[in-house]
Length: 202
Image (cartoon, rainbow, N blue to C red; front, side):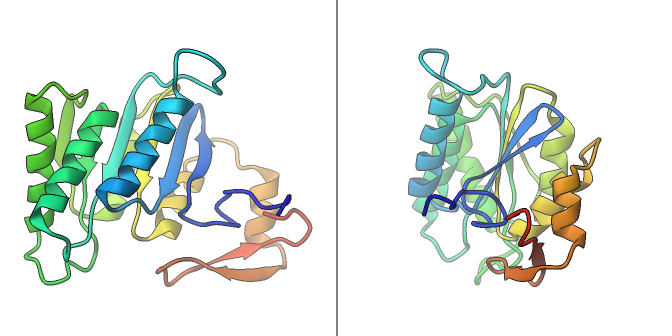
C-alpha cells in the first residue's frame, strides 16, 4: 500500500497528474456529474489561494464527455458542473455513442454549460470537438505554463501518449519505462498496453 500512487502506470485514468513544460495535466475517467464534481473539488483544493497548495492555476481547461446511455438531464448536469469549475471547456463524445446520433450527447452537455454560464458560472469559453484525440490536442494547444488541463477520457492511453509526445525534454525514466524490458499493464478499455519497468516502478 505504501508503494501505491495515482501514476498512470499504476492507476491509468485515475487522477493521473502530469507536468508538461509548466502545464499541469490531469487524466481521469470522470464521465458523470458526481465524478466530475469530485474532480472539480480536487481542482479547487489544488489551486486554492489560501493555505497549503502545490500550485495555483492561471487558467483551468477541461475536456469533458459522458456516455450516450445516460439520461438527458444527467448530460445537462454534467455541463453545469463543468461550467462551475472550469474556465475553458471542450466537449467531446465517446467513440461509441450507445444508441445516440453522433453529436446528440455533446449538444445536451453544451446546453448545461450554457445554462450555467447564464446563471453566472465561471466558464468563459466552450466549444464542441467530438473526437477525443482532437479534443485533447485542442486543449493542450490552448494551454500555457501555469495552466491546468483536465482530460476526462475514454481511452486513457491515447491521451497519455499525446502528453508524452509533447514533452520538450523526454524523461530518462519515462524512456526506460517505455523501451526497457518489463511486464505489460493493460489499460482500461484501451486496445493498447503500457510497458512497466520493474527497476523504476513506472
